[in-house]
Image (cartoon, rainbow, N blue to C red; front, side):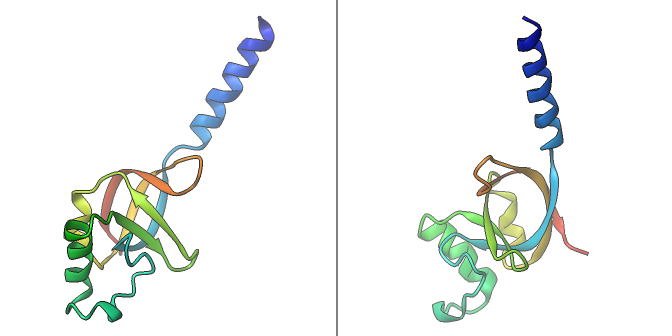
Length: 109
């Protein structure tokens, strides 16, 4: 019984330690996950991002150029107003490190 309690406390501590983090990058779409929309020839990057999400069943993602990683955002509504813009997202990564549960999105400073 004591061993089970210790395991529960250890798991709880790990969950707390893996809480929300801050990520900075560009809001883009899963179709053009590296944030390069030149080949699409649709005008602005923002227009391409929104079109890919709405018209091609893409998802809004945060692209971190430094890490060269894209994270699918749990919030698929708020990112539209930040399409192709640099933002700061506060949230929690899933265990696979691919999906980001969004707590907040704000324009990067």
